[in-house]
Length: 281
Length: 351
Image (cartoon, rainbow over all chains, first blue to last red; front, side):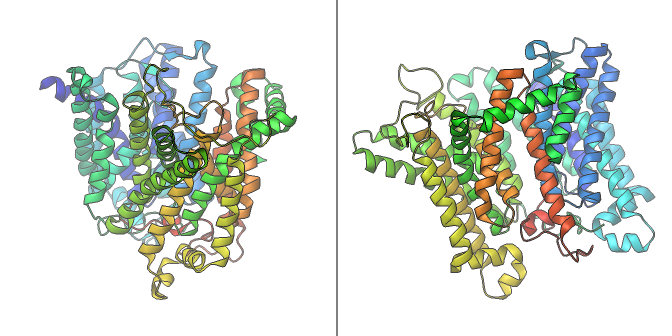
């Protein structure tokens, strides 16, 4: 039971970071399916920096920075170039998968590994802290109010003297940094290895957690835990020798199917930020 | 152009050499259009993209973004293989027809799910289709390595199918799939422009509110569009499995061929006209076959091509938005003729 919980927390940390990032971006009105690409960039950069310097803290910073940079890219594409947010996300995810795989292949022997790794209880605490802080900032600070205003009614925010564009840039960059940390937690905590497409859809699962968690950091984190628990149960079943009777490919479907069922059973029209996906600048 | 230039910058930075991009690109071009066999490779790569491109195009026309083409292609390919193996005793033409039909049915079913979830439950089709892609990947891999694996055969693939698409010329790998794909694209283009179905589909794509007010059922049109879209993607899976030489059996790693995602890029590049799918598919087919040559010649990893494609998608979308005359920053969505409203400004609650 304890092992199951530990495994669930291990799966939860990357999802929680990314889902919190998703909430920040979407509450400001910017759809963020680029979470997947941001996580992947963070994962690659962290292992790459940690293996080059031997310093995990630098690895963590590199991951955070890489995620933030991808966030900046998403912000420029959606705000300055006014490309529809989903197209930008699709492009970024495709590009990041290509870029990280390309860079991985350039490493000698095609492997990227860091001997030093981060402690995962520390990352779990950091994730919990990120969820708590984001909740506070969104709900209780002027900055949070402005950010939510941009997502609910950008026209009114603009009239009140808020620069909607600037707030959204900030929100999407912060979202990228958080998702980048999710990538760090995925790659640099347990094995310290980066593999091709290592996020394997976790960014999309995190976004589903945002939706199911009603665009609220606590709700998103709780939903992410539910998905993580599903993943942990699947891993436990596999290691418990049920692999012979239930094929592993089916067990690894569990999180995706759970997400699909979750999306199919709720209607959340009236809870979402009213100006989500708003193309105006 | 912008995409290729940025790709060159990335190659130069990553490989710390100014001449690396030139070498890589000249090799890429040779591999794509350098000689008849390069052309044959390019056309063979472009063939499935015509079908997946048409699939994504039909969905776009109805205002839906079918990112699930890759999954629909996989289940379509598997269905074609299953029929082709199970009914081996049937006469070849009949078996071929049945295989193609089975693939279209499987792809349509896979395309129906995100449409249903969108229309009935309000879940955005992009998220659900992405999740269904993972389900398709795992399920087809499981079936090809497990229950459907050829007894005593190599691991990770099914037995050989009974009827295959024959070659157009004995010297090259091109087969009848190319003809099927070209006809499908032409039919799509004509049907979208000249039939009631096409009219209703485009009306919904350009303004669901106005279409609904004019008495068109948006839900029905969108579900039909995704059924057709899925069927086209499934057909793409079938022509690859039944035609291409390394296949003719279903491999466990069929999902990941990238045909679905490249089709998506081709459809976006094609913009407003389905006829433009021909040059778009040729371009991406060329990029794919050239990339192999590039990796072989100068060792530049072929994944750089995905980066070029990604930049291309965003550049095309940006150009559509920026160039439009009288484009004012109001809630009207710029570029909505090509980019569906559900993508340009998703309904609240869906993403």
